[in-house]
Length: 111
Length: 368
View 1: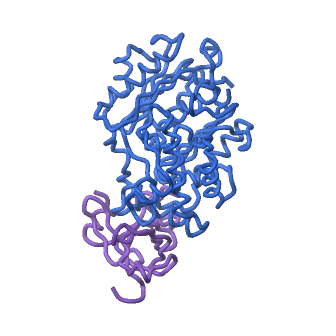
View 2 (view 1 turned 180 degrees about the vertical axis):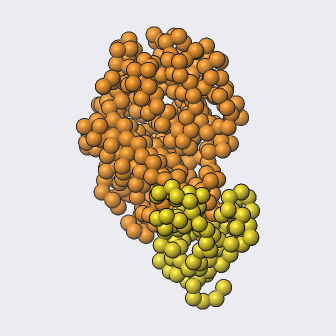
View 3 (view 1 turned 90 degrees about the vertical axis):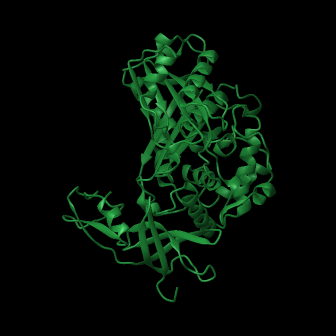
């Protein structure tokens, strides 16, 4: 497993920063995809923006952008009447079980 | 530069049959030999197999099973656009002078592993393509007021077109209402908005200019555009635009010195209904946002110049075969041999194929 997947298994979302040009490397890799230098790992800022979403039965899913660069698809634990594209969301939990799982909640308000 | 033509083709029926990948490949190859005069196994310099199947060494296996001893033989895999990537590779072997005749055979089974890109962690648990397609659809609806009825028109049109394709998976026709009544896969896609994986194979024979003269009605490859912007969904900044398609189309038009208005017949990659609408816009048939009304007009006027064989939605989508089958359709159209699907006076044709949420696209231009 990769560093990213190992940390996800522990419930940690870590991302790779280039040690040289400081680019955020996403999807994660051992090398920078800009200058091919080694990366260092750190925890992500969990606050992001909902780019777009859809729904399958009762499950809402959508593309979220974190740190202005990292885009991924996650589950959105948001009431369907309260959801809107562009809204602030935060990473609620993450895990890895035969694949990654990301869950987001609204930045403000309860879940 | 050496010119390259399509000089032969063969197809199997696209179906949910449980046939081995080797059987599919040899069936399409036999069909090609049956359809093509003046070709012997010893004439073939290159055998390329386009597939996402996990079986190893398939081009050598196909060669042995069909009595061919090629100079060059290997597999090409690039998810859904493997077929058109293979044709570009075969074209390159011929243009370079390494080969005069290349056989390209694409095949996949209904349970093909190429539907999921497990590497892409940015998809989270939403690995199936239906999830990115739903989000693309929602974004297009939001920005351009595209409706569920517009999307349904793509499916209804392509199923109608597939009725006259003897190799298509589907022979059923559906109205817009039928599509809208089909099961919701997500809030933004009905079941009939989606192409389906199936078993099938398609084969084409490419030849250099000198050799092509001995075949009937060679169809020339005039333009090639290919672009890979990324592998992950994460790099797709504009969810309503297929950037790799835009770039590939420009490359192909520049190479061929052909304008979009010159195109008589087109094969587009409609894995989902939204993909056809976006491809029409990104290739330049219409301006951004007008793809839906263009498709509605095609449906209302029963115009089959876009996806005459039924697209992926009507024909089925055996991943490795799809791009090859698209090329066969344009070849038949330009040879005036497309029977009930024939577009009148078709001289210039376009093939568009893509992979993995349009992170990679190919556009090919053909002329009779």
